[in-house]
Length: 521
Image 1 (cartoon, rainbow, N blue to C red):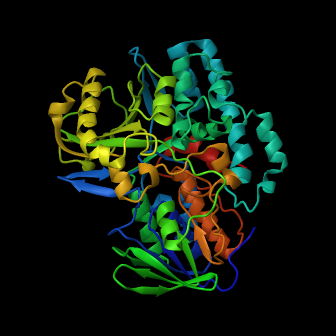
Image 2: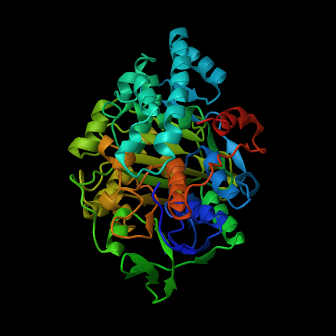
Image 3: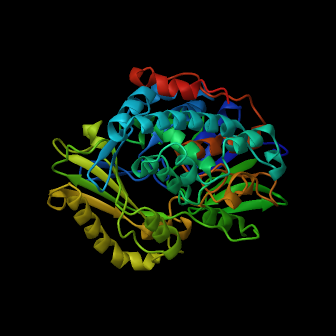
């Protein structure tokens, strides 16, 4: 594995999002002096926090899986995620509601999910679920160490027996078709394939290997940090500070000083100069390229994932049919993905993620009030409406979403809203996200593994990237890994420290977490 040459005693990490904080903790654990420079007033990045009239909103991800990957970062400095954050295992992980009025609760416990599938779709589908679960577990073991949690220097690293194992498992076939080998009910197939949208690819075109995301959601377990998802980066920043990191808040890096092929200092908008021996850059790729003064050449331009409209709604009531996470599927499916990724139209029959964090933490809202987060995938600004168009389109689309949710059973939603915040591709664009999407570069085959933008920057000896735009990719687990991989480029390879500790405070979740913790991959 290639590493940063020369002295690396003092490392500046640009950005205090999940990847930057993970990098900082791993660097501190390896004995480096670390300074973190963040343009916002506190940690989180995409996983930020907004206070709105007593409602405490998570501005980014709402789903936490694979918590042992976060615990690795804490463990690097002798700390523990489970000491810093109270995790609540979600049972069910999701509730999926369909246009025909049916619903299925998605459990990560095998026996509970088998019983639920039997109730929902019969014995044959329940047996298919068991086979699917076994396949997902084997797929995860084949991929995790060799293709996800690894630094690639060359595509030749793919030439390993694990590649043959992945091929034998059907990992290079199409995701939707492979899920169909186990499940024939189209509703259940959606439950185990919609996750490919996180990777920016429709299930019919995604590689079956991306079912590893379904493993994280439906096998390894889904958790909620008390205090909201922002509690995770807040705890990581506290642990890093306790371990000696220095933080510069409200400090936007505007320039890099360079001597020959090395960056020698970062400069902020206020004129501050911070000398360094190495730098980890975690902003979105356009910001990184602006700081570096150039964009790396690629044979084909990068393709970006679809974007999303998010409605944060503080309400005076809630609805009993909602779980913590509810997937509300429309009747359309293939057409929906064509609209998102090909024609650039807003979903005519949307599938939505509704998260109700106050179901497990009422303190996120004023007494007697409730918080709902509605995510509607939409085209990015390259494929669909421009960022400028969203300033006028956003309010109209918000009204369409509220009307659709009321039609699907959330009666009186519009009248119940007391405080709200709408996020559209215009907002993501203003935050520096390419193509107006918070989901970054899509995971097509040509943009995955060794073909994704590398975390070592050609032409610079001591610049390393972390975050969802580089390897291994998009999602909370993968950006945590990206921080660890970036740190390894500076410190050199270290013994893998996958945490074997499971959260003492969620005993009911131990089986699913323990399976991930004890995984031999």
